[in-house]
Amino acid sequence: MSYALLQTEIEKPSADALQKAFKVLSELVDLDADSLSNDGYGIIVRDLSRENAEQLAQAVNGQGISVEAVDECELVKLPPPKKLRRIDCLPDGLVLYDTLGRPETVDWSHVVMAGAGFVASTEAKRVEKTRVVIRQTGMQGGAFPIFLTDVSVKLEHKSRLVLDIFLDIAPGRVQLYAHKGQYNYLGDRLHTRYMNNFATLVQDLAEFATNAQLNRGADSLRSDNTVTFLYPNRHAYEEELIWLFWEKARA
Image 1 (cartoon, rainbow, N blue to C red):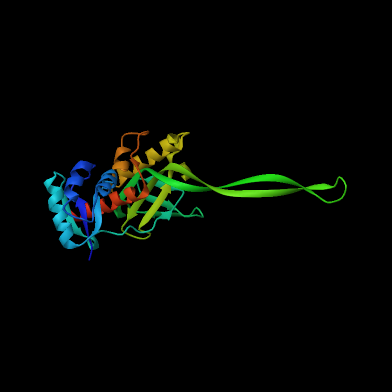
Image 2 (spheres, rainbow, N blue to C red):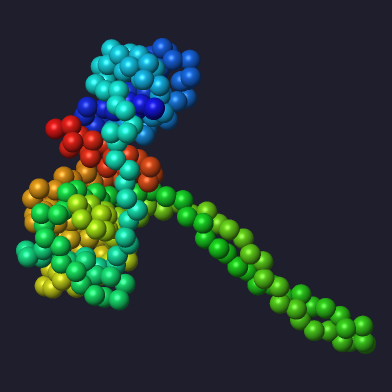
């Protein structure tokens, strides 16, 4: 049975405070404190024994960071997302369009949580370069070209604007990437920039899904069309969502 250390309120923990607290466990070092401080999105550390979790919780609380030792069985496992290109937020319900463009309307009461924000990631891009090699035929003055293709992989660091909506009915979780989204339902509100359309979509979602909990990225978009919350990686983004589910159940 594994335990995790969860913050009672989401805020970036001090690396110095974590370094001091981590000294109670030989398994944790200063480097762990530095990395976990930068990745402080509700869950400080996982995979601890109950004894170590309780000991570490006492030490971390003693440094002014409010945490609880939690059995990891109490933490939800996020369902895999159903990726969509069009989601309409209408007063009568949330309309989800499948890959064939067929709509399905979900009552707003089924929306339990929404997460949004820029999520940093590293993507592998295939790069092909063609070069020409002239090969001699062996005959006097004879030659012909050979076209060779060199293939390599280039790593690109990007931040993608994403929306996740969690439902208490199937499919459980739907996901939309802003740059791939279709925002036809906005009508006269449709903007030339997809990021503005995305912000309006999230604002409509927050307005109609009155019982849904929002992550910090979605909440920041309620009144701001340009500034969004940046998550350093997908792990941090999803850790915050898991923490929010735990906090919701705890409350």
